Amino acid sequence: MSKFISVSLLGVMLLGGIASAQTPELPSAGITPGSPFFFLDRFFENIGTFFTFGDAKKAQRFVALAEERLSETKVLAERGDNNAELASDLYEEQFAKAKERAERSGNENALARVTEATSKHFTVLEEVIERVPEQAKASMQRALENSKQGQISALRALSGVNPERGVEAGANAAKEIAQQARMQASERKIEALEQKLQHFEGVFNSFANAPQGRVDVESKFSERMTEIVSELDEAGDEAKGTGISVQAGLVKRVKDKVIDSQLSSLRELMKENPEKAVEIFANAAEGRLNAAKRDTEERNGEATEESLEDYNKYAEFGQQISIMAEGIRTGDVTVEELVEKATSHHIQVLEDVRQKLPVRAQQEFQRAVDNASRVQEQRPASPDSMQQPFMRQPLQTEPQTPGMPEQTTGKKP
Image (cartoon, rainbow, N blue to C red; front, side):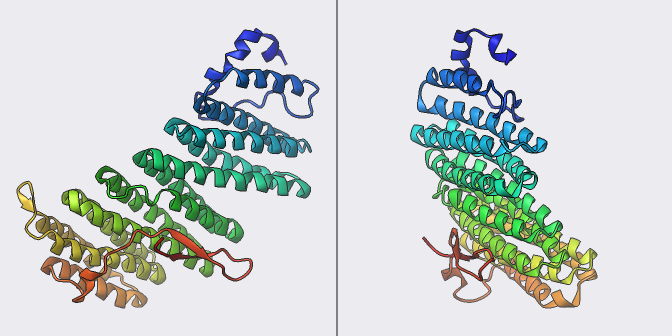
């Protein structure tokens, strides 16, 4: 209580402006529910909120208060105190207000604050759920799910207000979820992994259509997708390694749709900045070949086959962009020459892969060699391949076996 006694009422009234600053860690729990002084804590908080003006500032204020409630939830759960459930309910209340105010304001800083804070909140809530008694888990799980939906909603709004910032925030969130999925796969936590994949889908869909042909945004989107594909690939490898093949298949379907969206973005980028598009294509394709090389060294035939399959998607796209950009110069070279140079390096990596190639991956490897050769020769794999552009497709779901996550399928909106 001393922290409140030591400041004047005026000072507390001014807390609205101070509370809007981002904090890298959760704030101190301070006075927790169950304390006889907790009502004073809430009283002074309400005064501070009253004197915080404007939806954007109020949104940031509510985020700060939500984080304090979350900190209290964590402390109480660690103590085994039943008031953890009350603190969780109060967190949920404050977070809902933060989301509502941020979306109402249309302020990109407020929306970004909500989206960035939620990633931290998920980690804490997941830890808390493991600690609380069974009767409190439902309340905690509800708070977690509402936070996820709040993040997705705020990301969608942010992408509408500032597409470039929406893509950056969305890609950061998607990458973190993919990393968490990898951890769940390594620990063979099947239900948790499925939940992560569903969360990933929602986050990805919230920003995947943000670029809409804007060159800078298409560039950022397609570049960040290379990182996310790599993270999903590792999550899939972990799932295969721990023997949860069904979940590995779910990861692969999600990854396939991310690759399709990236290729769609690269096609748009080719129209305005072919040099950048080729650079991103080359790096993404090389990343899949490096994954194949790593998989061969680990004698993992299934993973090698999948990595080569991924590479072939990029290589087939490389055939298209090489023909699309025929005659276009960037500086002293043509785009075709840039593609050919990148593909020559890919062929060198393929030779490394060949040295330890598992029998299972031989067919996909031969496809990769053929595709790389076609890129150099500037000829498509089939006469109508140029008539089938890649679509930027959201990850949508269809009902599946009860108890299983919804299967990801690409559908044009």
